[in-house]
Amino acid sequence: QVQLVESGGGLVQPGGSLRLSCATFRSIFNLRAMGWYRQAPGKERELVARITLGYSNYADSVKGRFTISGDNAKNTVYLQMNSLKPEDTAVYYCNVDDYYSQYWGQGTQVTVSS
Image (cartoon, rainbow, N blue to C red; front, side):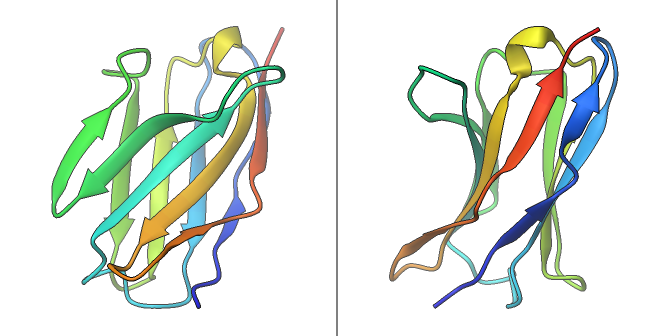
């Protein structure tokens, strides 16, 4: 079992930045994949960014604005979000795949509004 705890969400103005953190409480070095998803009201959950076997991929809507990274020493996955737009408003979820199962965090709310 892998416990994931997200933090870093909040209210930010358009054009602002936030960094989301996902504490995994285990080594992230040998994970198959780690990523961030989001779900806006009335919409399905969608992929935002993901690192799979060392390769990163991003949703077209966030390319050039968001960056996913991992810190092995802190067992933490990050999502740096810059140039935020109102359409980025959603609950953001951390996800990891350890080759045996996938695990989800409880989500953190990001609201982009003036």
